Length: 452
Ligand SMILES: [Zn+2]
Image 1 (cartoon, rainbow, N blue to C red):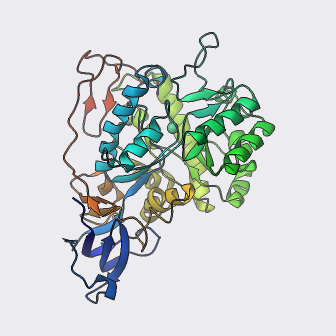
Image 2: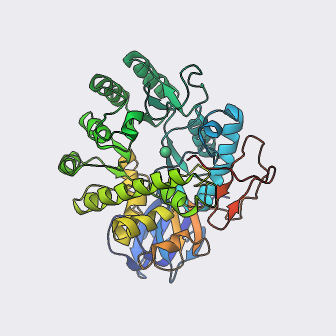
Image 3: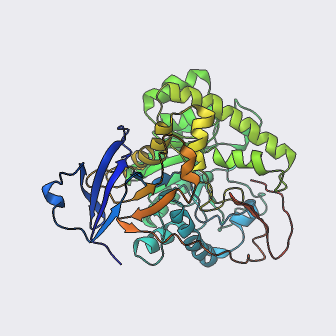
């Protein structure tokens, strides 16, 4: 049922612009977008006509729906590269992604940025949701990550070759990279994702990215020429700096930066998206899930690097985005998104306001969707959370389903009824870390180590 006109009245408006919360504030959504906002009793002329629906928000916070900048909708809570990249097939992966998308929306995440996945699943699910076929968040999606030989996402042995199902697409020459950009744009991705780190960097911090300057200039330049932004998986300093030099639009991970790089990064204005939840979940729950101790140690080092990098980045005013890296067994759909806000506060020292802005306004700005989502201002979509309490007092209430009393997308209230558990296919062997409990594979009852 469409409510053509929705009023949410008398709440505390946390509008996502960075402005102080406003008491006794009301807003009207007409045909999906916010048409006016007013404070107190004096309604503006455009809000005189009775609304089709009125929601009383007294004592509650009215805030923008969350934007998670790092959700892989096609990964299906896979435990390792094989589960993500090999099994399932495009048909299964797309249907499963549509199933999982509803969980994300029901958690209060009204927009996701999907930095790449298997086949062209992100585009199909985005379009199906936009056409009203399934409930789900708005999706801004990349296609398969473009990588070079020995780059991150080039996981498979040479004699096997990169499966056509893989999240990454291996391009050995500049010509192949350019062709892939053109094909992905033709296939209607929102943006291009590069896997920029080289495997050499995992053991040698002085090593460089998997692309050379000529390739980077060409690929990013071509994407921009075709009207697409470009992001990159880049944990290491040499990669981050090279990407920024060639005009990257935002950087995912950015775990390790050298002191001398911060001024350059700040002056570029390029936002960084740390993605902490995934690594922190492995540290907190890896032993319960059978993660190798060495892998847990790797993640501890990553978090240590992130803390050093992002405490400084925040001090220097580098724009910080927020994304949970949902989609793996350690970060299942609909469970952990808002934990990223908590970790930005706890680990990096962001104020609650700045951490919330990271997961709303800053993410919208990075993808160029700021006229549509990320803030509650006139003209933006009515993507709204109604929260029982003040998230500025404790951001963790955004992880508490009982405290998020209503979710609206385009002014329509979302059905919050839980998505039923489903049996897993035999190829989905891993089990996922839920915020409430571990989800063990009901078919095999096995505990599997999480490679991710
Ligand atoms: Zn990712």
